[in-house]
Image (cartoon, rainbow, N blue to C red):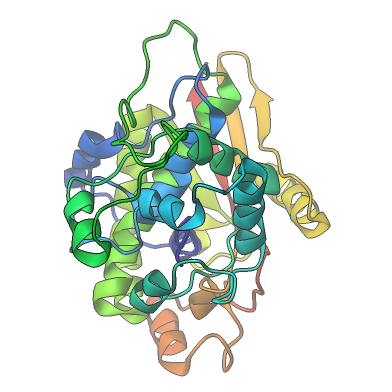
Length: 341
């Protein structure tokens, strides 16, 4: 199963070398589908939309899907006799150490492949699972016909109204409210929606043309996409690191200090909180970019995870590259964002 998507994509973008192109401002047309929901709503909803929908977006056509929609995930993990505690526990256990044995979706594993380990705090996983268990999940327009073709009539969830068999009423839309998100929520929104847009585009390249083609894509198009999302959010958004692939993405002194802070937090295995710096009229926001097994295809050890042809392409595109030798669950870089209060 490819639950919660392949976010290794973002680390590939962390140090790409390119020139902005104005046509990527069209991304703004799709940004509304990724924006965080009202702080009055269940926190798991916005976490699911901004993290899982990188690959599990219900608005994508069946042919373009690169992972099963979240409604399908829910239907495989819940039954009439499933308690919320068991549902949440299964989610947490799988995501902490994905394996075919733990997956309840063998068909999805066969079609899409087993997801790699993702860096998600346990509390984040629990909130997503808690929301999914108690609420309708938005489903693609094609899903009902697909399910009937593959499995026959859909099961009725007696006594579980609103727990997954509905059509996701009101999903993906903000409720009317006068409440405003905090600066921390705004920063997370900017980081997560930019990450999702980068991930969606690069994942499509990898699925269609492979890792080497994805490196070319990253080299040419990463910065225009990031700049377009910065325009959408009216902010300054960048990804920086202490081991840049492109020297222009080297972190400054303050960012290096924050990066070291995140390295310690991730290594300790606890909940990682963003760093928010109040500058009066502006806010600076920092959050880590963490590797998983898929990241190592371009950032791992040469001769092991990093194949010779891929390394040759990296050296061709980035002669000054320092971004190899990583292991799983390491801080590859950080989001560095500045916006007006």
